Length: 361
Image (tube, rainbow, N blue to C red; front, side, top):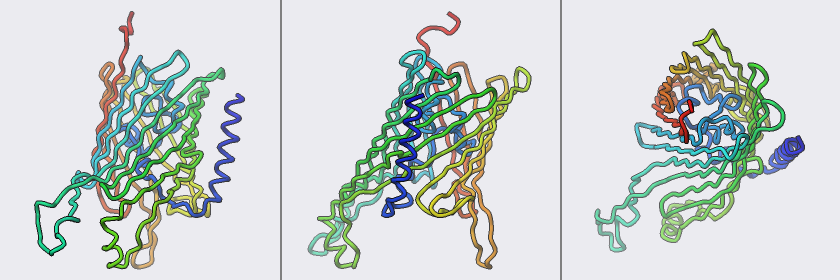
């Protein structure tokens, strides 16, 4: 209990400190807000209270110690904008003992094969297409996670140490470090959870290679970028879920999450300055622990049309999962358009439970 009390005190302190960082950008390291795993994305990202597998390393590390097997592996591949941007994710989770679990995760969100034409025209004005090159604009995150059960039945806690690396070809790169922390508590059929992301703020140290492009910046009147820090402020996510068992074959698990930000007014359902809250709603229906159907809603926004009328937009999602002994295959269909249009994304993920001995031994 002492460690939990310290965590809550420290988290509240860092939130108050972060509010003073007025120079921090409102949106930073946004690739870490997309979400991982087709199960979670099919439920609109409502996971903080109910997640209990290897993907907990992303959603709430407190759930890691509920993962199955002597080793659990989770993989995901996702593509956006007709395959232009690709998002890949992998986690390996393993128990230390009956109460503790550790995990290592890797995420990569990138646009590859971008044409680099900086050397296309030489100093004499000659065009040489052989000088065309390609580069990638890629964001990486490495998560090292720890989770443990407490002496209080149903209460778990966990944390992440994360390293962020962002790179735009040879032109710019950044390294960043941060911490996440979370708790979960099960009471009967209720599932409660809280996740603090970037609780100490995450600092990205940017380095720009402008030596080759400085003349172009000056001639076009653009500001030459300077090396510096980009700060990701803390975010608090609260979740509540409920597990319903209907007979021996059917189960239902609805969940509501509330993403709370402290960096000023955002275009979300509950907005104020400096605190805004973005709700996520999801539900999973299961049959015989074999077939799962999912649906969710998130990113609820209000827009103003050309005629001055207001419209409410949201992003729906749906998914399906199959559990085949130790292998789980999940699929989700999401709409990532925030302007009222349709921009579908197909998400596929796998989860494998590995046991040293047959579970029937």
